[in-house]
Length: 167
DNA sequence: CGCCTTTGACCCGCGC
DNA sequence: GCGCGGGTCAAAGGCG
Image (cartoon, rainbow, N blue to C red):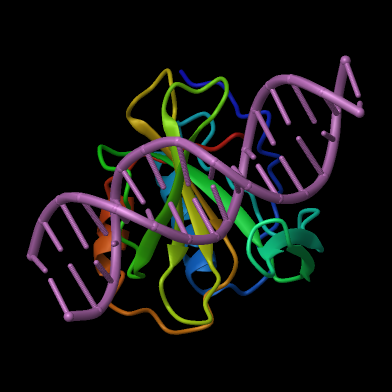
């Protein structure tokens, strides 16, 4: 079985009303309930963590000139699933902007950003070293626009995925 | 032709 | 103060 993720502090709080995020959480919780026996269920990095103020380096004028900006809307949560594909179609359009190898993990981590203008939602997808079938998806931010297409497909994918939890 | 992926360099925070 | 680990930029190429 899988071991828990020490890096992912799990907070059993599902109070905020996030659109997709909430749907995911509720969906995941529901599925976790369905799968009941699964030790773990859903790994949720709920929002409200210490992300109140996050400094982000923004290029000011070419290289060398970086401007410090503070962000307040950084909500983050993650979940891991069993899936063959990395990209889970959640109804939004994403543009990949980076890929980096992480220490302790043999598989690289991919960084995506919502292509919608003004929407600064990011997500990163990472595959576990030990279990290639397990994919960790982390969302950061809240979409400031409606979903482009129906997320039914995503729900379908979710419904046939096994979701882990760490509590 | 426009958007997306790829990929190396760059930047930053933090620990030693 | 330096090095490492992690996140982002941006140029160039690819594909529909």
